[in-house]
Image 1 (cartoon, rainbow, N blue to C red):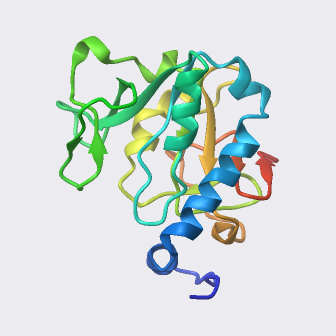
Image 2 (tube, helix red, strand yellow):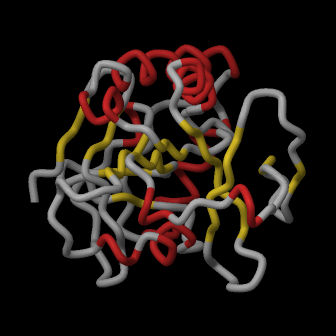
Length: 203
């Protein structure tokens, strides 16, 4: 499938981007994910981070799991999101180590068991990798529409960029869009990393 064009309606844009992402061959996604990881390991924010949160890539998303495996080998503590057990539409981050048992949530996404002893608050992360459907030159992020990351990371809005956690969106190059509309509740990553570029927030 060719690179998606950008319709005016956000629902149409989401649908088009989802279809495009689903059309990607697994080897294409794997190579793109490795290229993104190669960019990120050179970033000072990654090199100095001690607590790193990612996600399990699915349906054509850039997959940060190879990066988390490397981070674990480097002695960093790694975390994955789980659906909040009490507050709908929010996430908790649970400690993850290679080989640990995983469960499927109601969306069919693998996540660690929900264990309060393994939880770390998002505000105490150094680096959080975010999935997305689309992004623009200002690093505005188009998500799936559920608002999970926007609600969970709402405390970061209006904060100075150097304060933790640093938020990095992971994307394919073709997911870049023209300027996206921004709602008051949207959380904007500090940077978007693609296989060929690191796009820092310019707004």
